[in-house]
Length: 269
Image (cartoon, rainbow, N blue to C red; front, side):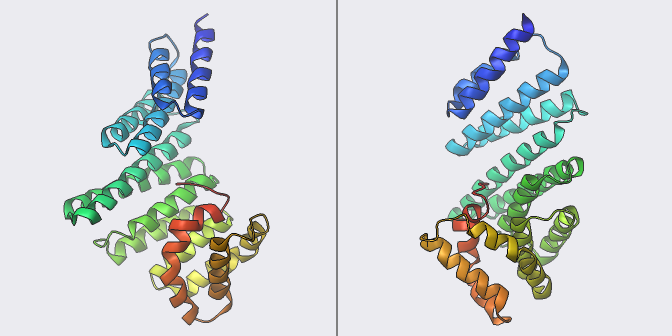
């Protein structure tokens, strides 16, 4: 009977989450956690509870809710540190930290507050640790690598970040992703290397992803003006000389902030 009740709570929580009733999902998972269950099952409920808090925090831009999600992810891992699903928990935890880091980064710019900028930088560092550990456990996870790369790019928008810090994070990202062939990851690495003024390495990354990127374009709406502009930028970058990079760097915010998620399988950070 207990197992049946747990299954009911689990399915109900997933349905509530998927339909956008995040507060309902949170109540459902809390109710489930009052029941007897083994540690692995409890860790699964805690992880799902963390996901619900994270999603609600993102909508409300609410720091206490983010912190609550961090707490639940931590409890899930501590309860069952050898759980094979640990990599997924770390990925979701890192993504949640990254979202809070971006909120702090935006606030620091609006208020010219260096303390918020430093806090944002520290949160990004914590997210990198979670992504790094997740990819160690599951080396071929492209979603982890994608979010990690975007997080490093977002970090570059904090003016207090030095080049050496960006270089060390890019090197760690290169090491983690070198065995994974994926066009969006190559594109991200290309941008990071360009920001480090390593044009040869940047061009190598972009050229490596050119064929696959063009295949992705075949499935997208050719009438989309944003896509046409981005495609022209990409062609210019790949097929011209160094001066093309000047055009690209002036458009890099467009590529990442407006269209990168859309261009690459509509993934969203």
